[in-house]
Figure: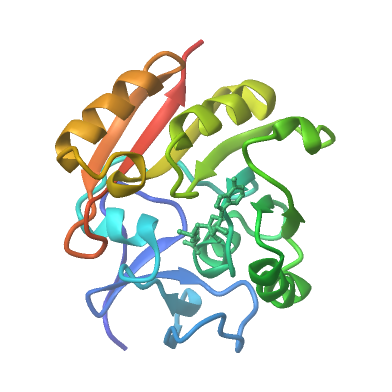
Length: 224
Ligand SMILES: C[S@@+](CC[C@H](N)C(=O)[O-])C[C@H]1O[C@@H](n2cnc3c(N)ncnc32)[C@H](O)[C@@H]1O
């Protein structure tokens, strides 16, 4: 059996296996996309593709702080067809829950098939810019935003003001070109970090190239 070790930095539920990062499959035997499944002494592992998922790219790029933990409640803005959220679902386990906001009904139909098997994912057809349209969501431990729109930092803050617990975390994938095509990515990251520090402490940042061109990944902790 090849060597498996828990990720340096102690990321809960994330493993190295044959130079690939993996999560432990919540639904053994079932794939969500074209990932590989491996049997191990930890149970069945699913490879987490850094070219398909930005948090996986961030971990490959040396992220030090990845605050996901077992049993967490998560609000996910831009959940799409469920590639990344399926790995979050593995990490948080059956007692955790992901509220997944998605604006496109076509895309939402795809995640419904994932959520049928993974009961810790609750997909919602809604606009992440309007958190007042899903007021019933409980307070969460972490908000993740991957919506690739110009005002994505403002949208993240708006949602966190409404739903994030006082000691909670957030993560955001910044797509520089969606914010300002005329600026260099580095300038855009600086500008977005400045906005985000109004409400958060920045605990980590990595650029995602070559996995995702002109993207940055920021980890945040709510200011008390
Ligand atoms: C880059 S994709 C997300 C990929 C996904 N996070 C993953 O890694 O599996 C961005 C998604 O955000 C959705 N989106 C864009 N604007 C949105 C909004 N205002 N509210 C909710 N979802 C939005 C898009 O329809 C798209 O599915």
